[in-house]
Amino acid sequence: MNTHSHIDRAAREVLEANRVAVFIVAYNASKHIASVLNRIPSWVSEELVEIYLIDDSSKDDTALIASQINWPTNFAPLRVFKTPFNQGYGGNQKIGYNYAIKQNFDIVVLLHGDGQYAPEALPHLLSEYVNGADAVFGSRFINAGGALKGGMPLYKFIGNRVLSGLQNYFMKGSLSEWHSGYRSYRTSLLKRVPFSCNSNDFDFDAEIIIQTLGAGGVIKEVPIPTFYGDEICHVNGMRYAVQCMKNVLQYRAMQAELFFDPRFDLSKYGQESKQSKKCAVTTINGFIENLNLPTALKILEFDAMNHELGFNQSPNSVANEYDVVVALDTLQNQSSPELALLNIGKHLKANGLLYVSCANVAYFPVRLMLFFGFFNYGRKGVLDRAHHRLFTKGSFRRLLLQGGFEVEMVHGFGPPIIDRVGQSLVLRLLDKASYFLARSWVSLFAFEILFIAKKRVDIEWLLQKTTAYTNKSE
Image (cartoon, rainbow, N blue to C red; front, side, top):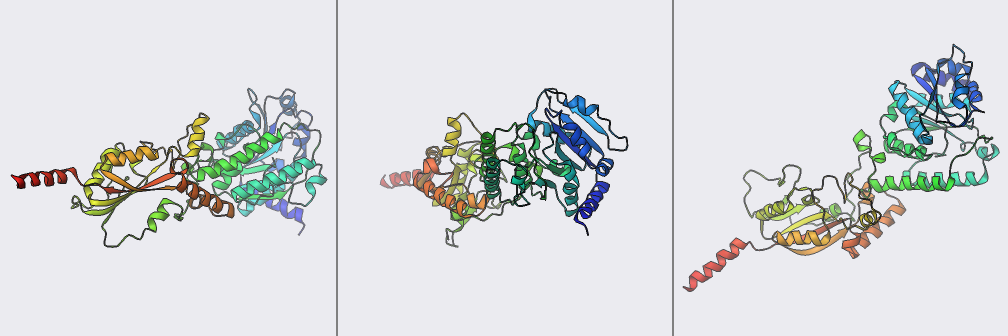
C-alpha cells in the first residue's frame, strides 16, 4: 500500500470520528498567511470543523489580510481573531486552547502563520490519533540529516540536540525533538494539565510537554520537512535554553518535594502518577523499617489523621503502657504540638522511647529561597501546606525537652530522592551525597530530622517518691 494513501486514509478516519480544528498562531505574518491557509490540503479543509487564526496584535496587516481571503464555502469556517494587546507566543496558545475546549473540539492542531511548518503535513499529524495518541508533534529530526538539509543553522541544530537530550534525560522521555512548534493535542489532554499557568513566552511548548509526560499522556511524533525562509525569529536562544532547563529541574525538584509550582501540580487534576513507597535506606521510613525493634516491645504509631491528638489506640488503652511511640512528620501538623507531645508522654512507660521527626525549615534550599525573597508552601516536604508549625533542629529539640523528654540521638536525612523521583546513576549519587551531608551537618543539610528521645521520669512519680522518703524519716 502506498504510504501516503495509508496516512491519508488514517487522517480521514480521524477527521470523520472527531471534531478537529486548526489553530493558527500569527504575529507579523502578513506576507505568509494567505499561502499558509491555501496550502492546507483541500480535503482536510473540507473535513475540519473550523480553522481559526489568532493574530497577536501584529504591527502589520496580518488579521486584515486573513479576513479578506476568498475562502471557499465548502471549506470549514475560517475565523479571524485579534488579541487586544500582545500576549506572547505562549499567551496566544493559552487563548487558542481555551477556545478549543469551550467549542468542544476533540483535537486541535497548532499551525504557525509564518509558514515555517508545512501545512501539507497536516494529514501526518492527524493519522497518528488512530494509534491512541494524546498529542502528536511534527519532528524535524526523525529523518537523519533532514534538519540541516532544510536549512537549519548549525548552531540551532547543535543547540536543539543538546537541549532535547538533556530534557529527555531529566524527564525520562524519548522525544526526537522538544522544540518543534508543529503540534496537535486532544482537548481531553488539555483539560488534564494546567497549561494556563504556563509561560507566555516560547518556553510554553517545553512546559506543556513536561505536563503531558507528568500526566501520563502519550505523545507520538511524525517526520516533517524543515524550512527556514524569511520568517522573523523572535526567540532569545540562550534565555530560552536556560528557561527550558530550569523548568525540567523545577519539575524534578517538585517531585522530591523541594519546590512547588502550580504548573506542575498535576495531583489536583488526578493525573500525577502515584509513587510507590520504596523506603530507601537513606530516608527516615527506611531507617525505621530497619530498626529491628524487639517483638516483645509494645509500640504505638502516632496517627495525626484520626484525631487532633492522633492516637491509634483501643478504647481500653491505659496510661504508661507503651514501650515505644513512633511519630513521623506529624507534630508539625498539630495545632498544639506541645499538647500532643504531653499526651504521647502519658502513654509511654518511664524511660520509653519516642521516635519523632520534623521537617527542617532551615534546610539550605529554603534558606536560599528566603535569601532571594521567595517563600514557597508546597504539597509536602519542608513547607507542607498542612503544617501548623515550622521547626528547626534547635526549636524541635526545645519542644521535646519542655515536653518531658531527653534527646538521646539526632539523625538528619535528605529528601526522598530515590523514592519520589526514581533511580539512575546521577540520582543515586545525589541521594548518597544528600544523605552524607544531612548526617554531617543536620541543621543545614537535613531535609527532615529524626529525634530519638527518652521519656523522663514523671514529675508526679518523683513527687510521690520524694514525699514517701520524708514520711519514712518522721
